[in-house]
Amino acid sequence: MSLQTPSSTVPNATLSLGLDDKSEDTSTPFGKAVRCFEIVNTNAEGSIQDMHQNRIKSLRKELEYLKETSWKYDPIDKYIGQSCK
Image (cartoon, rainbow, N blue to C red; front, side, top):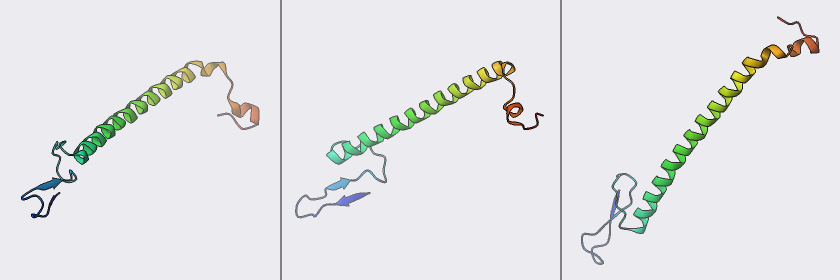
């Protein structure tokens, strides 16, 4: 989306808002801010994905440990009076 400035001030000048187009116009402060926001947003998405993968790894590791050590413990149902299947 671009806006035309009044022709009395600057003839044929346009201001790029960077909302619809993906142009890399960083010549204006607004363009630099939009580009900075895009970079931060992309990095944040990557960080979120990395944190998710680390949580999944941690949970899988804990699940493996529980599977390996489950023979050491009696089922809790035995202690609370529930029937053990």
